[in-house]
Amino acid sequence: MISELNQRSREIFRQIVDAYVTTGEPVGSRTIARRLGQTVSPATVRNVMAQLEEQGLLYAPHTSAGRIPTEVGLRLFVHGLLEIGALSEDERETIESRCAASGRSLPEVLGEASRLLSGLSSCAGLVVAPKTDRPLRHIEFVNLGQGRALVVLVTEDGLVENRVIEVPLGVPAATLAMATNFLNARLVGRTLEEARRDVLLEIEEQRSELDELSSKVVGAGLATWAGGRRGTGQLIVRGQAKLLDDVTALSDLERIRALFEVLETREAMATLLEETGRGAGVQIFIGSENPLFQHSGCSMVVSPYMNSKEQIIGAIGVIGPTRINYAHIIPLVDYTAKVIGRLLG
Image 1 (cartoon, rainbow, N blue to C red):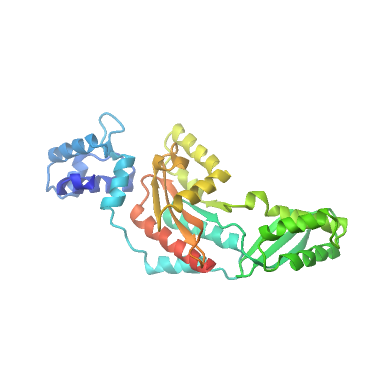
Image 2: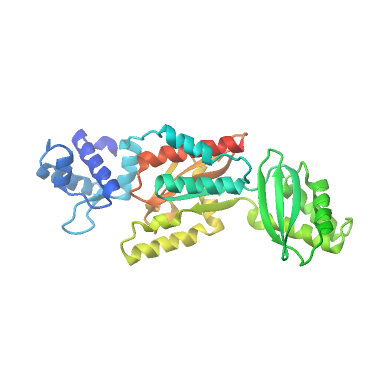
């Protein structure tokens, strides 16, 4: 459709979208004429705006209001007219330093990346974390007291993931040590999914050297990564409150609430990964283009990150109103995804 617009229509349309992204308000012809330095009259701008409205690129939210871009218009702008900016050196250094893995588990690093994107973009940051399917180097149970223990998984490539599990009250240190030794003898060099079935079968058939209490500890530890951990990993969202900044009506609040509920489902993770994996690099979903956001009036800018085998294992991005600053957020998401990919690779 961009080829159907002449140069003047393109420039007026660009100015309308720029003004809308900045203010969130409908844009009138006099505003655009001033932004263009009075090189065209307000009457000429109104005629062009009427043509753009007929083409489905603009609409008037109220009878006597200015115009704002439709989702189709925003899509046209992003793919045909947007001039993507570059990150500053300070922004690059901030991303590099805050996503560093020194002494932190993978969920902690990814949670920090999500918070970072939220802060730099003024949107909600999201990360789809990879599932734990890497060969293991070590597993350990650490007593936390009061019927809880920490399970520490260390993969062969050095990533650490921690989980808190429930164990029988008063479980002795010797039992946790026995469970640790039992699993390390069977898991090292294999993924958790590869070994899990064999371990549980061995316990069930009572072929192991574990006593009843140690068996319960092992079962609880394995169950932590079973079922819900398989396939899509974990969804981490930070800065959800920023989605409420533009809420001006009760109906807007209801749409955002519905979005929060969707993001808490496993289907959301599967959808995010599926949509992201369909193309290389940064993907942009505006409004109802993404089934997750069809009723929320939000946009998502997201990029996959890959492991050393160039396999997509997760995604990172931001969710915000459809008028987000695409020119800044696109390179922000792209660079953060590359940093996370290098870390995991």
